[in-house]
Length: 169
Image (cartoon, rainbow, N blue to C red; front, side, top):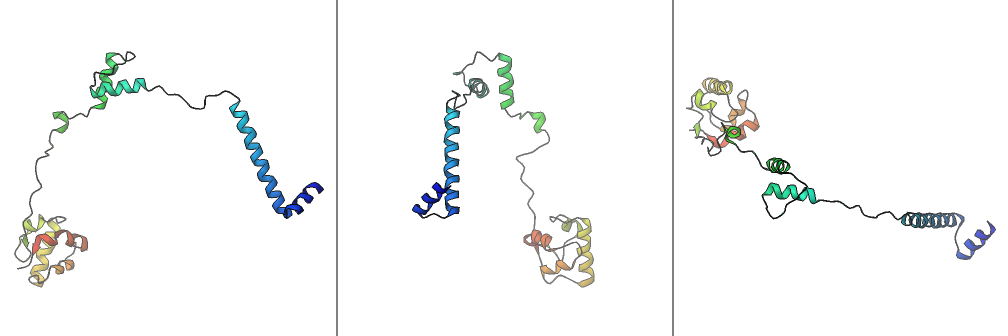
């Protein structure tokens, strides 16, 4: 230990700094030794993968006749291609209409609308439409659209949904 103390005094290190420096040097030496041992085992550094089977499945599914794999039989090729294709048969799409546009909503006058007309508004049902009619009959005609907030069942979110679809005349 006297040897280390002499060296640390010459360098100007404290005892703690000397201990830390020795620890770092020891860790580096252990790392170098492990690296040398590991490289001397003659192990392959990189794993090798054979993607030829997956490539042939892909080419069979895409219909590319240029790449063939003799490891796949015809049944495997058919299964692979069927797996890759989406099934848009008539049975799967039956009852669905993709060309229909949503119905256009007409502008409704709050002061003259009937219950069925009010029930067509988004978020409205028979109960909410009836509540609007009852409010209108007890309080008179609506003067502002925001008066709808006084009707039970209508909140800010519902009012914002229908604000563009209603008018007061």
